[in-house]
Image (cartoon, rainbow, N blue to C red; front, side, top):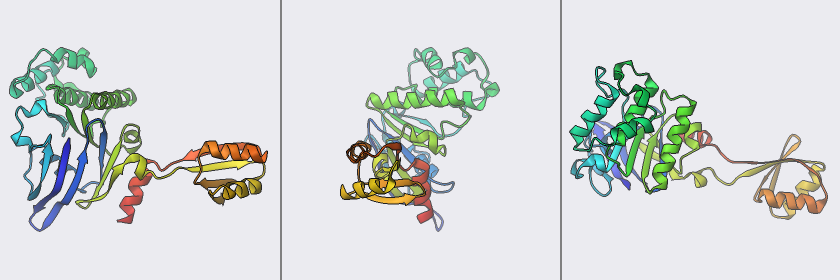
Length: 290
């Protein structure tokens, strides 16, 4: 569990974050979204013990990062890119991190294979591509087998297969009861895996909740052989109907109910599509409203 409680960080007279409160629960992927300068990085840095809050608390499994016993066994983080010595090989980097964290070295070869870097284990990290450095950062985060992952823009530099690999990694981690907190600007990609959403702007929480709730009820786009009869039938059933050209926009009924009503009216259906708000739509509507 990650708990952010009334977190405030002030620089001079400027609040980088103010009264930020949210949780990231086990078994779920929580997306932390915000424009540049919104307070995301400050929140994550405080969570990982890299900055001190002015007031409030950022807790991992009930404790501040600096109070955790063997913190790398509790939380793994991808916070900044390229945090490896360019003269070290990928294998040597992981050995160094294991020694510094008091962790066993017997998982290193398996982790390099898991993140797809077994072919580059003996290659200097200074010669790695951005995507390879991201994979190495993920391997570093997994060294201690932590139950909490904190990922800041982990998909930067990843190609489409790499994106798929990262999604599967997060799903596997949460399926085992782990917690994932991820910050990313790639909203279409994030939408495929996120369970809960926290939107931050100007240092304050603008919206938070399960993705299913924030996306709202779905709306149906329906095109049939007799739009007037369909509209009247749906309204009699209690649905709300509006017209967009030759398409009915119907809210308040399920696709199955819409099909059954059309069948009862003996009106053929040519198009029936359920529309929900995408993550980008949610983010932009919240950000623009504030």
